[in-house]
Length: 189
Image (cartoon, rainbow, N blue to C red; front, side, top):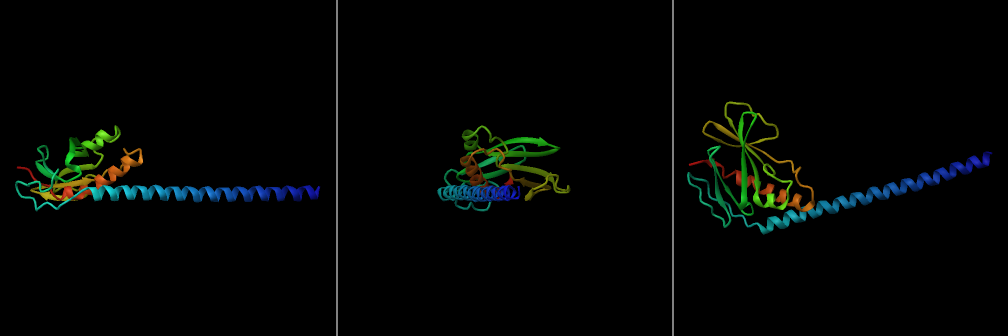
């Protein structure tokens, strides 16, 4: 009986050892695969940035002029502002929305909407107008500019609409350009 018990423990130790080795290999394989996907995303974003020829726009005046081919001035009458979009976001799109008493626009690009059905208004974030006297009502926002007695806050998107690596890379590339677009924020004419 003692001899069979010893064999049983030896067998269990071998099985446990094999299971541990297989688990370690699978963990390493998944880590490597994740690293490969992360590198692919970074390479795609870098490629999209290289393809986008962005020239800084002169300081906005009361009537900003698009200085880059494909750039255009977007007037947002609901908020009384203008923004100048730059390549590749020459197809900048927005949807006005009043939420919790705050006026704002949900930002996206027409090309994103045409690429996937899951990325609609707000895929690139939200620009919100709020009285300068009030405490910021939204979390995870960045103050973009004070115009008159109104603060304009940007709330970045969470990339939840991207379901595949191509859409995720396109969203990240467009989002990387958003700060440059937000610097062009000025009072509408």
